[in-house]
Image (cartoon, rainbow, N blue to C red; front, side):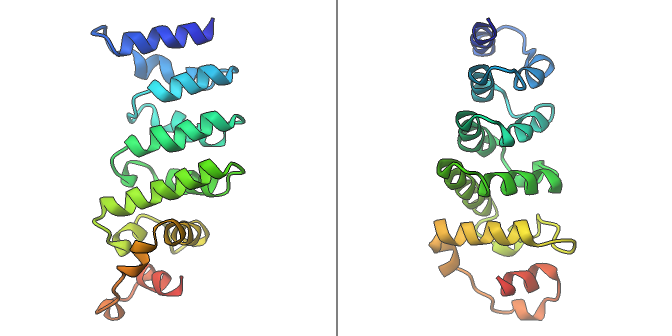
Length: 175
């Protein structure tokens, strides 16, 4: 029944009916049925009202739901700054530490997309992390980025960056 309900809402969302998704869908993504969670994740619009629900599914028990979240949902959100620092770190920690290699690869691809949104400026991207209180997630993100996107590593230039003092530049040199 829940699966059919989700399919019905998918049709409604794709039609001209009023958009009631932000009100009804965040709680549906927590359904006990993994097929419903997957359908909801595929069709939920990424808005300020649904971001918390999407981030919560990065630890879903079903691999297929996590794959949808990392491969389909999260890349639709235009900038990593739409997430709080805690949400960004949770997304990366859960994705890069996942037991499913497909989820890990999708998380690494997401990092590459986020860096591309900053025109490849790695220092600007690193500025989206809270580097003063801890660097573990940012370090894992950089390692995954360099592993999956060696072109980013080749394009790094630290000319003049030594003149800047701050945790972002210090951290980038350390990694």
